[in-house]
Length: 227
Image 1 (cartoon, rainbow, N blue to C red):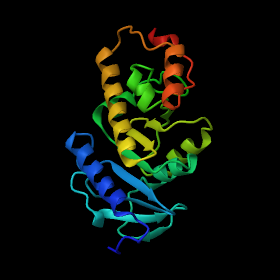
Image 2 (cartoon, helix red, strand yellow; image 1 turned 120 degrees about the vertical axis):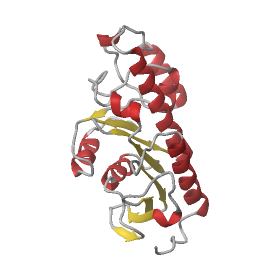
Image 3 (cartoon, rainbow, N blue to C red; image 1 turned 180 degrees about the vertical axis):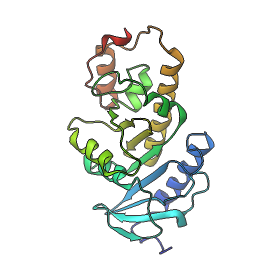
Image 4 (cartoon, one colour; image 1 turned 90 degrees about the vertical axis):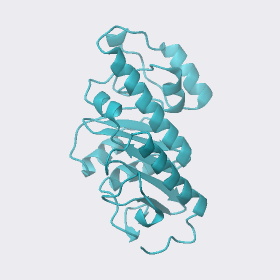
């Protein structure tokens, strides 16, 4: 692999590898599924196609420009367009995590809570750490259609569920993106445990207050479907 460019701060690359291993150790990235990226200056470093997040090393990172040009390293994951869409959406995004974790995949197969969030405000921590999480219609893995669907949504969000596929989460730091991905998986698990029962999510006022205080994205109006 071509050595990482001088602009690629070793601490950021080390943190990316650490968080990839951590997410895999939690069982959130089975086999060779899932991928992770970090923005360093004008470059994007992301896991290579076929690599496992449980064993990823610096040699398994591809370097792309923010326009998607492959600059160095192995062939990037086919989900690179998804990552690039989040970097385009918010200039403050510094890291993106895409997982095929079981509960998030299961939740992505359910009807969404609302147009702007697949999941309801089921816990304060979901609202605080993840925020509204739209459901993106099914497209084949690696398809540019996923990125196009993300681009066309003009409201703010830092996470999404891909229908029948999994989750993708952005953050201002690599640890923040990883923590949000874990919190999204937890919220999905809670929702699935509740099943078809009636339950009480946070009220609109409670969710909006948390979002404002913690600077997350939540402008969803509650659905009556679960209340």
